[in-house]
Length: 462
Image 1 (cartoon, rainbow, N blue to C red):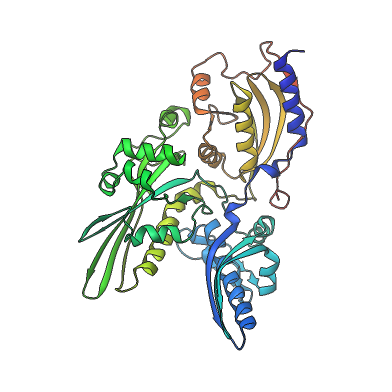
Image 2 (cartoon, rainbow, N blue to C red; image 1 turned 90 degrees about the vertical axis):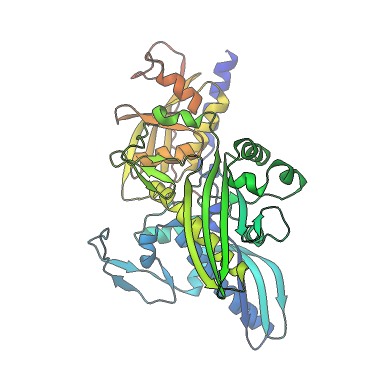
């Protein structure tokens, strides 16, 4: 028995024994560092009230994180009686929708745990930051019962460089940069478009300055991306003016760097639409015919917002501004990755790979995305695998989800789908001999795999 055949048999055995559930993460179901504060007759009573209020705030943050803004009026609500709402507006459904009421007991049942930070209490007050963790399967079930599509697919984490511009100059690494401090107050790695702030240590200051960040210095931004092992760097530019007792703030998230070695050649690989005739939408381009997501280019504004508030409390304004622009940035990604369990398709797919590491990456990406309900491997060879993939909603959304995992997914005829790493995909698409052929069709050694289906449903993934 050859080494390759033995390795393939071991891999096939692993595929049959490891459920897809374990490959998916639950970061999006964590709401970190919610501020709670309450006053009551006793410290214990104040603590219970604060934690209950914090839980209500956390579930609202979570449900809005997972859904699009058009559906927010129909989200389950705490303390509300069941009611039926007739949608209106140009994109409204013709079907009335029922808003599901949530009790505090239901919220506790949805919660899997919480962590308390910086707890402070007195005889009748309580203050703290609390991170709430919710049960993924229960939250999915709640949204399905409410009839609301949702997304839980995350992009790869981006590094954020918060540059503050005022009449006095530019700030990035300076200790008196409250814009940087606001980004560090709570982590944003639980968002659908996760982000992380830099350390701000001596090495960071030696790599890039505020002026270089705003100028989108390619070399410096690439070095920051390499240092933090990210594929994207976003410059969060806050322009603050103060006049007549008011703060006027403009915030822009600018795409400063994007990994380009493999993914920039994806115009042909992913069947993307050209920019001609496509409409810019929050940093992404959507083609009217194919509805295919096109990542932002360097220099594109991913999100922009303006704020006018009474002067005096910039940290509060900064926190609000961050929440708004992150939501704007996530909007096109949500719309491209929404899970609609009322629609499902069984896709015949071929995986192409040049090593077992590439195959492991493909398998992990497929079974970890919530857009995939199951993966059935039918045959396996040294260079590829034949699969049946059960996908929810429009298959084009799966293209987006795979790209976020660093993979290319495409179809040449709309019936048979192919998946590979970008470099392997380029080679495959240039090899006319493989088009239209399945593995083993030309005598290539394959290992049949027992029809082991990795069923992944919203109730069983966790």
